[in-house]
Length: 102
Image (cartoon, rainbow, N blue to C red; front, side, top):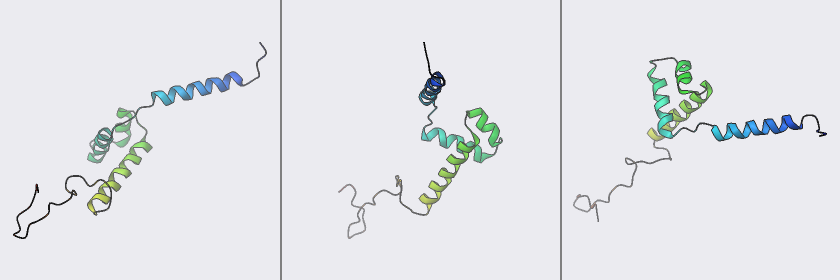
């Protein structure tokens, strides 16, 4: 029963880290967008919104920054998700009629 001092504390810390890692909340893209848009509406303070959603203020601001930068890239025609409006355009025939489907 001779244990080194600090060994059980290290094991406990490791156990707590593993539990936190497994129980960490993951948010879908739709949930992130919903939360960021709620913050942009300004109906309640960011602090209150974050408390209600169970996230930190810094996480909200990170999502908000990513959301706005992605929107700016998309509107400026940069690369990234092309979506339906950026899909390949249908080829035109000589008469000007759209040849889609071929």
